[in-house]
Length: 477
Image 1 (tube, rainbow, N blue to C red):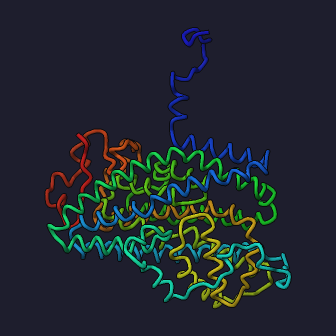
Image 2: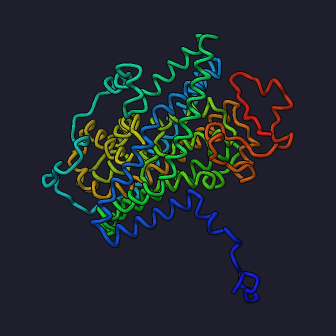
């Protein structure tokens, strides 16, 4: 029966609608996640063997992270043309990061003390062993001084070949200031870096086509290796952690968005593709380039995005902050160790340091927790064996919370710095100016239609468009 001969009352899908849906990256990633979970559940051994698919995708993206951050931060600082403006943005971002990280930790501390998921386990510390834990969790951890020194790379190029974000930020900031100070001599290099970043974002666009495959492999490995039954053993900890992370996102980050004249739920819809990629890979690194492009498309200036978002990946890991407080107190409860308020607050102070610099990849939160326990005498590091098996099920919540937190932080800092086009941001979040990942838009995604005059009030005010460090988002006419 043809489409025209359909029975009365029958609803038929428009031609090509299924094809259009399947062409959307977030739909592909959702299919990958569900298919991976099914494979891992039905064929556990085969699912566990699919881990290289997820690892390979993350490795491809990680390969691009350092050069993308370098180009974006350097171009952002050089285009601001004012070292004082760069310092002001950085200071506002760091203050915001520290305040929100502390809030996240306090919320986690309150929840774990109320719910007490570890109470009643009565684990004998003498039965615990560090055997089977990752080597990074049992090795001696560096002091604060050593941590600071580790952010300085051996050579300038070596920062771009390592696996840490902080050395890349250090080199990028110095190089950006150097181009600023060089004046005309640095103008050509700045233009070259901008052109290079366009090439890098094109490569990222190609790599992201493999995101559904990476999500499929990672989810199949997780379910196949650990099994659905793993969740039942410590469901209270996993469930309370996910609910706490959800509370932080909806209430705390939602309040921050409201204060800045925006709404959280439209923002979550706007970055739904990135959230599904994070859910599938348990890592926030793969979406960093796309988040930078989308935040600029939403009206935040390139310099603010280029400085704030990469820094947030080291200094604003809200999900990890919640995990550290809940995980450490849970282990104390499981071992029957009664931590006083003073001891818990001292652990929180240590966590403010150990949570910094943790990469946004799978397992980094677990290593940060190991660093915390090794720095305080209250809970033995061997207790990590109790949650090692279920850590993977909490890593998704850590990464998701941190991605949303860093996106909100970037918009907030841009608003406070006067470098957020609020009318454009609202229009983008409402879906009126859709984001497209065409090659020419990957670096500087612009609206596809001429905005109304009052959508860009700065166009009527030349001083607003050319103010200190302000880089307006031009319209593609």
